[in-house]
Amino acid sequence: MDVLNVEYMLGLVPVLLRYLPLTLQLAGIGMVLALILACLFAVVRVLRIPVLNQLTIVFISFFRGTPLLVQLFLFYYGLPQLFSALTVIDGITATIMGLTMHFSAYMAESIRAAIVGVDRSQTEAALSIGMTNGQLMRRVVLPQATRVALPTLMNYFIDMIKATSLAFTLGVTELMGATQKEAAGSFLYFEAFIVAAIMYWIVVELLSKLQNYLETRLNKAYNR
Amino acid sequence: MIKLSSLSKHFGETVVLDEIDLAIEEGEIVVIIGPSGTGKSTLLRCINFLEQPTAGTMTVGDLTVDVNRASRADILSMRRRTAFVFQNYALFANKTALQNIAERLLVVDKWPKEKAYQRAREILDQIGLADKADAYPASMSGGQQQRVGIGRAMAAGADVILFDEPTSSLDPEWVEEVLGLMKQLASERQTMMVVTHEMSFARDVADRVIFIDGGHIVEQGPPGDIFHNPKDPRTKAFLKKILATSPV
Image 1 (cartoon, rainbow over the protein chains, first blue to last red):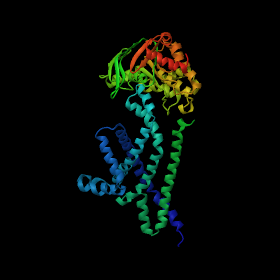
Image 2 (image 1 turned 90 degrees about the vertical axis):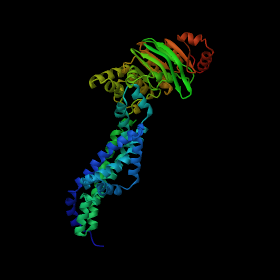
Image 3 (image 1 turned 180 degrees about the horizontal axis):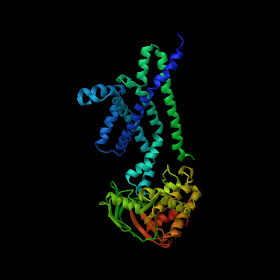
Image 4 (image 1 turned 30 degrees about the vertical axis):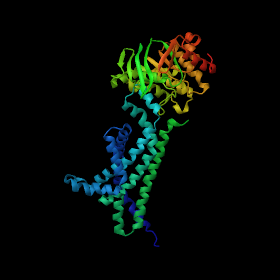
């Protein structure tokens, strides 16, 4: 076994760091959009709104039932073929679309479960003082459902950060794409990818810290 | 001030309330007794629209609604006039005692924050929990939680407070403090409808005791008459059974 080229690895750090912001942007925008979509789906499912409920079920089934990579290729290569207006979709947009829809399907189910899990008598109490359904959701149900759903949602966020690496297959030069290019130039594949791996790892570790902090805060009301 | 006319509630084929007629004066303390599953709680829940009544009309204060024609606005309006105290307290678990009481003032009545919290603190004082303002329900005893539940109902400034077996979930050691608070409210002539199995409360506090069985008002009158001189055989049988276990 050859020794690791540590000097190369250290030199690669600042190079790859330039591409980390794009990775974080893909995941960050994807997460915000996926959360919004997932909340809408969850509310549609909980309230069983006719038609929308059925559509949501099919949507969730499809985006949970097919690989993310297939979905990305559908958005990037497939849609422009059907609708020429969609050729404007670039790799970044297609990645965000794919991440949003794929992960919203998963998150909708855990948000739905969390909403259903909120003590029914508190819902009645909120109605009994004259709250509207919207006020009930905003003030009583969603804050408590958030606490229940947080650990799983953070898991999906972590998964999404790593899933952004698939964007390189659509020609997006994010952390994974950049690493691929650097490695192909230097032939030091192990060094390049271990640096990338450590970068993903550190980001995820920082997120886990954030998760712990948020959980402690949200659990404040429930400590005896 | 409260008037129910031919109020009915059916669950499918089952008739839980059968054309109830009832009028309650302002400041009157009414205690509703009767066997389990005879529609006592359903009656209270219908008045607050937690259950949609099947037929009839209800008047609370200056609002009269035909239950089948009640708009969403009517239902909200009726709920705002009738405050509810739940058997299992049903406090908002994500809010402190103070916030539980202020919630209605802030969100429903749209009071400014400062005014709402000031009022909520006054109520905490009245219910003897000023020191628990920032405590969450999980850290309070059952008795304390139910007092906050009553405080939340008091904040509403409602025409009537509906108590649905307010002491039934409590450990015996907490029952007295909750009944004590209810007596205090009664002495201030807060209009109350109380479903309870606490016969001594009914005897000491009620202006009128109503015995419900099978979805009907079987008998009603001052507590002395009901407890010592019941007319209907069903009332007699019920009182005999319940007074054997908890004498008045």
